[in-house]
Amino acid sequence: MSGSITPEMGTLAIVGILIVFGVLALIATVVALLKRLDDRWQDHEARQSAAALDKEPTIDNTTLVLIAAAAATAVGGRFRVRRIRRLLSPKQKRTPWSAHGRLVLQGSHTVRRKRDHR
Image 1: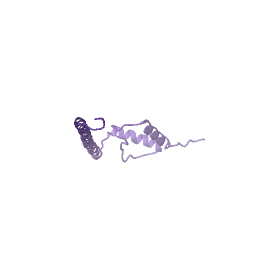
Image 2: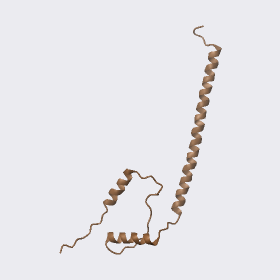
Image 3: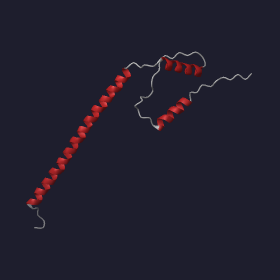
Image 4: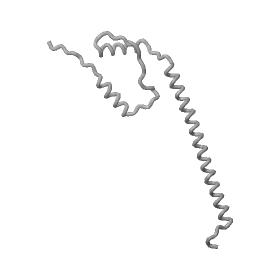
């Protein structure tokens, strides 16, 4: 019998198809479980971030005086610091690209001092 399918071949094909579908179902289950875990982790991080933003920031008086003095020196007179806030979380990853962009932006805001040419 050269062109016909034997019962053993049919059984083997059915078993092979069942194995493939079983493995695909297992993979789909693992992916769904990982997605659920990732969603829970993202939700947890979002709640922690929101709680950190709601928390009242504290700063010691020495640091406040130093920041006010630096601002007064840059502006050239008396200066009152109303609010200090952190731009980036200390846990956030810093890339060379963002550091360079921040450096260029801050460098473009330099205060030129008036020189007395008498």
